[in-house]
Image (cartoon, rainbow, N blue to C red; front, side, top):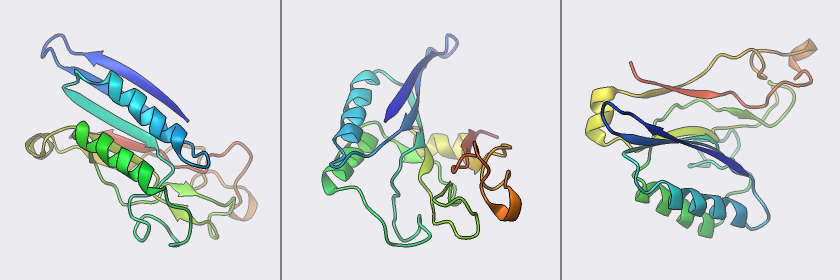
Amino acid sequence: GRALLTRVYDPHSHNISFIINLHLLWDGNHTTATSILKLISARITEADYVYLLGDFNFVQDRHKDRSCADGPSPPSSFLTAWHRFTSTHLLTEIHQPSHTHFSSTHVDTANTSRIDRIYTSHTEAERGAYRPFSYLSHVPNTLLTSTGKGGDRSPGISDHVPVSLAFP
């Protein structure tokens, strides 16, 4: 897995924000993903706001976030670490309901899942005032927008659709 952690200082408000782009990969026992969460957590202690986004490679709800209920789920040890991480940093998902990953090279037969997400540490009042929303970005090189003959994925085309965050 990998993580890009960016610290942003706003000289006008004196706020410190962290923007974390995370790509979790799964080894046999999820220790790498758990270790990444611990490393990030140790580095974002003074944040006013945290924005966590990326490819998490697991779903929150296997019945809502997958096209088929079958498939691996993270072990309880990782889920405990995940819930500890999100609660420690007061992270709430800025929900968008669309599936973002396609596990096949053909869009019509792909199993899909919602594994790309965005979280922020805004309070409920701030979310009400700022009204952040998450949506699928239009980019030219995804399975949904660049298909070859018969809807097959062309070489170099991502099997993910990127998710964006905006504040109106």
